[in-house]
Image (tube, rainbow, N blue to C red):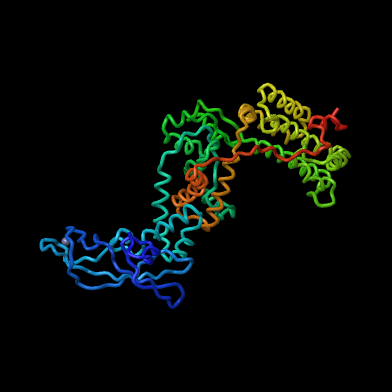
Length: 473
Ligand SMILES: [Zn+2]
């Protein structure tokens, strides 16, 4: 308990405020004395002593008051041990908030650790604010973070696996050949909780199938058995790791990456065709260049005028029709993906999805003179089971991507990491922050149904649009 109001306001157990003065450089000087019976006891033998050897004044660092620095002046006694047999002759008083040889209050360390772990500022910034050194702030954070991260993750039903680049790739120029050789390209494989709130579950250095399998092997068999669905982007390495370590789980492909592939194919065709037609790369003023932004949009989000513009531009000659064929291919693929429950409101059946995928393959086969479409169709057919599973379950890797963004932000704030262990620790804390925050309040989670953008009222349904294309018959 505190002796008086001023001591209570200071709030350090065992210290009593005797005076407060304005400090010369702003802030305040707070003079305190020891007000704790236990402080009279020798730390070695425990004998209470009243014999004062000398008086010392220490200046331990403490938290700020309303933004101003607090200059703590602790007047304390060095006492003589009353026990003749004790090897220790003298000792200075100490209180739990300021153990022997400590020059920083426990609450200041705790505050620095919380600012790094809870608020996401860097150890350098936290150290500057607290007036302590970087190693001290970092050590306080590491002690706090390791305690949180060492806990085993709760069972996860939907696991996401994604890669994350650590820093940037480094190259060196070969003296003899003048060619660039890759010196270092460092990656982390990250594991995410897609269904729950646990965020980033763990990271492992490297991005081979063995690296991913190594992390999964470290989990308990019961934890692995609880995983129902594994979501990856179109990456065969992680697919083989998941098949090896989680044979019972359904593998799904992230649909964003599937559409991304199709959009890229359309862009590739457009660039190739423009080069064939003009003998140079596209530039503003070319009709094909004018619609390149429209071609990457979802068909259902085009206005009637935009749709007509695409048709008018592409229907002009065989070059345009080649781009149109790729674009229709993309939309036919999206047709299959749009069967997911988030779009239609009901879970699709497998037959339906495979039928629409077949329509896409059929379209690609009809246009086998377009190599990009053939490559796209081959890739899609290789991942067909995973894509169908993704459409049925509606599970995406969006959480992984958003957490990857957080990881990148963390690296930027730190101006890059030199120490991979520090990086993993900081990233994991950053990516599980929301989870901890929620679990502390543990009131309720608000859910909102995501319906996407409203389609244009003039829009008649994507298949209708494709049917009226003049050159399709
Ligand atoms: Zn003693």
